[in-house]
Length: 150
Image (cartoon, rainbow, N blue to C red):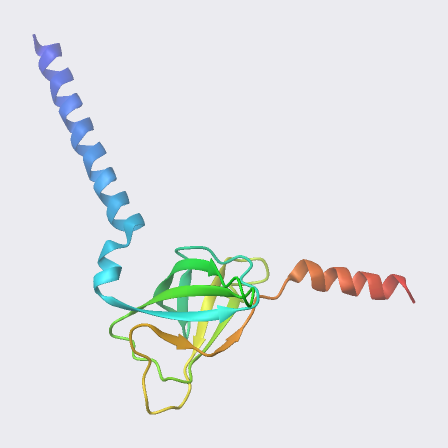
C-alpha cells in the first residue's frame, strides 16, 4: 500500500514537472509576448547567409528585437527580412542594418546603427541602408587563390 502511494506521488510530480517544461518552452520559443510589445519593420539585403527566423536584432550589443520572417523578392532577388523591434526602442528613419557575426565563427545577427534623423521608424517602415553578410569562406578562398597564383 505504501509503495502505491509513493508511486502515485512520484507520477504526479513527474506530470507537473513535464507541464512546467512545456509551458516554459511554449513561452520561450513562441515569442508571443514579443509580438504584443513590438512593431514590425523590414529591410532588404543582397545576402543574408546565416540569418534565420528568430535571429537576434542588436543595437549597441543589446538585443532589441528578432527576425520574424525571411522572404525572397522575385524581381530584384534580394532577401526581404521582417524584423520585430521592441516598442521601447525608437529608431531614426536613417538607421542602418547590417548582417554581423559575434566573433570569428559565431552566430550571425542583424546589427542596427541609428542615424541622426529627427523622424522615427514606425510600424511597417523599411530600413533603406543595409549591408549584407560577408562570406568568410569565399574571402579565404580568394586569398588562397591569389597566394598560389603568384
